[in-house]
Image 1 (cartoon, rainbow, N blue to C red):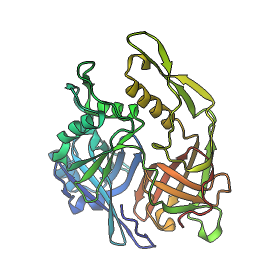
Image 2: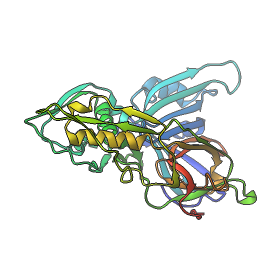
Image 3: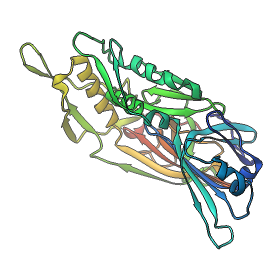
Image 4: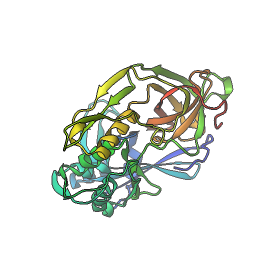
Length: 379
């Protein structure tokens, strides 16, 4: 999305729909739009719900609904334009629609609900084999099937080399493509999600570590009078969130087991705070004794990294007041919350709530510790 200021100009929403290739919807559909809610969360499928007014008989009731315009598996692309700069919020598929008929004026509605294009990867169970392919190569082969939908893969090679050894083990897939890709991501401490845009009909399937490096978004400011951009931020420190995983590997010849050392999670989770939270739990990972050392080490690193975030924050902002769209799965600074909780955070999720004259975003933030690394954030 563009890192351009919103200012106090109008916010326009655009809808593109179609069976596979999308086009702008008819004017009657745009005029009937009541609300749209889109949720994007790191490591999870994005979802949406859009409501339309059916009070007045028109094209939706008389023609589009009977013709299947809103049927499940119809593709939907949602974009917003602020002061002429467009950003794609969602590229997904309808999975359900509901018509609520009412005698009350303005209460007859059509509501469509759906999920992003990774739903395509979760519709069919498959059995496949991947001889002599590393994890990232298996992901690349799976994602190539969905190029017709404008999905381009961005794949980061796993942090611990896992050379394929066909003579010892051939990797099989059972289940859907999405389950297979997500399992590979979890086993390496990675995340998998669809990033829509930069234009309608195009998107990026990202498989790699959470993006905790690079340019920060404009800060979320609280408790600073006229400079505040959010009304309230709530932070929590969950002492039981972080775990110290334990993993053992077994020598197939001698049957002796060895405890693997605790890994450095820095390559996957660069620190965002000075004081990392301690791990109160110790968990033994099941099944690692049957794995090769590289695979067991990767699972140990993955578990240590994904359980590291004990600090969470949540809040709501008005896009016009904040001046910028808050993007999920990137970093953002917080100021005005005090020494303990100021600083940079990873944006775990964002829910966009759009209605005529209003654009609100609910968000959640995470990081691994307390006290900012720097006394400055991007304004």
